[in-house]
Image (cartoon, rainbow, N blue to C red):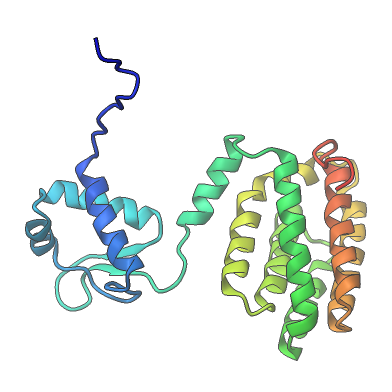
Length: 247
């Protein structure tokens, strides 16, 4: 009898996955670009040789991923349009992956350190006066003595994302925003566990000011060192045990 060990199962690819693959192929090779309208549902279903329910399923998945915007109604503004700006799909996916435990706490910390250290180094080199003014404004709002944890964390996120934006690298800024949104609940819960969160917030404020000062003075090494210490300190003091030794 011939051996069956080199046989592989036949994969059954769902219709909607084949539709998505064709749309993806056209995006990657440049035939489709941001702002383009896909053909009408009827015409596209006929061209692809699929049922309209299968096509709708594909478009719903692409909409959830933030690739297309499904606009209701006919006319030139209706139908499926390829988005020109990043959607929330990546943020939502990353948040769920982290929530399900697919990444360890140390994975998150190390990724934050790598991303934020690079952002601070680039921001120290590339920032504009407007960048510094915006970052200062965020920190000024964080100084409100009556601020609550939710708003404090929102501004904390805005500060770190704004640093990433000042690098001029849109992908880095988007990834930073996605990462911070993904760990938002973790951050809020960390503050809730503190006996004196307002005292801890004072430390966070001072560390933020020091990071911003280094960026404003174009001290790249100082900014990297300070933001690394800031992130490690936060996790050490509020989420004990997730920071690997020697990080």
